[in-house]
Length: 367
Image (tube, rainbow, N blue to C red; front, side):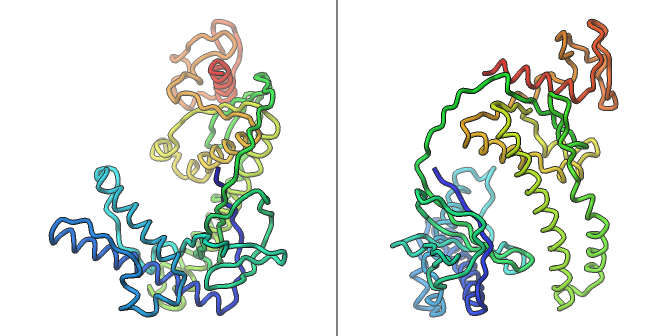
């Protein structure tokens, strides 16, 4: 199996210059190879095979950067090019990379153990040598380093993502189906569980929305491309980064808590993108990051030998009484109905808690 470990890099000024050169060289070689492939196809309908080595004689400065980074750009281009011809309706044609808008990153491979970590919180990279990084967690000794991706965020920070390969030790604990929880998605509370609890999501975007709009307003009044414009873009990016980091931290801590506590967790397989497009819930849905939370919860439970199970998106959960199982669509017909009483058994329900209980019941029937 594979796992990636992401760290904050602390390169020197000389190393930063070389990293920027590598970003530019990778972007250049990608665009140049794409241009030649397009010209060859337009000329005689052939799929031109190109390699970075072909261009090093004409562009000597390509020899200054990591050759494995350039080779990976060739692989990325070939993957994008092949994917388009395999399914042109679903996958768009490869686009030229832009210096302004595209993400700054490059990937280098671990050949002859060139990527390695020492005890002084330093990682060795091709051409760069030893680079300091913030080692907030150790890579297990049984993991083999396969590659590393160096990237720069919009705020100017450098990061390294180290991809490792390891042999998975299968964990098969005795799971108790009664130690389980159903989660019903809620735009207001993130989720409501079958025990009546809620996540109480802090709404990080709403918290920084006024500050963000103020800084974006300043940016809109500046001349595009000017020095002040570039400085203000970093200010706006820092606010977005704060929101993203806060959301990810919340989702990681909450998913770990659930994975440690329960053997089974059940959720609805709902399309959050479609929810964000209607019902005037777009901002709340996109702010929650419930989709990311589900992915975090999935791999954390799998690591512990536990299971996250998704039930069908069309299974009736809100309109069925969790006590007697009768169907009452005529009562729970709109989202405005938050509480209702079952006329058959007399049970009084909170809409979201009742839905979470039904999700748990349907999930248990799938085990």
